[in-house]
Image (cartoon, rainbow, N blue to C red; front, side, top):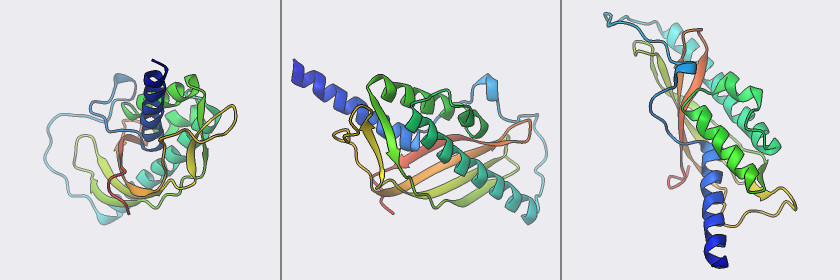
Length: 188
């Protein structure tokens, strides 16, 4: 019985580690941070400068998301205010749940997550406008540890792997990261 509970604990923490580091994909944003939507309109041509500006804003949001989630995870604070400045639902809820569950199990994140993101697609004609980001995350020094003694949680791993994210422009003009996934089976 004890072995089975220990295995569940390890599996749970491994799942949390994956969610906290890369936060899984999502589908429909929630009403609190609903993306910009409107009626059907004719396609509009956007200049390269507009697309470049959108890409820069999306990369800023992505960088803020990684920094905010790292700080919130290190403090075991799922309500950290910086999260909502850079992340939108459904990803925001997933990140908060992962941090809360890690805290409830006595775990937290430590170390440094190294990121090298690039914009791979900009779609300003989409409803809502989106920017797709691809990243090579280096989580070698970013670990899930027990808060009590800083021992690494068994079954968690670091390494370099592909991550993807979607930035969405919301009605107030902000670009927020609304979806993301880590592809640990795809090293980079």
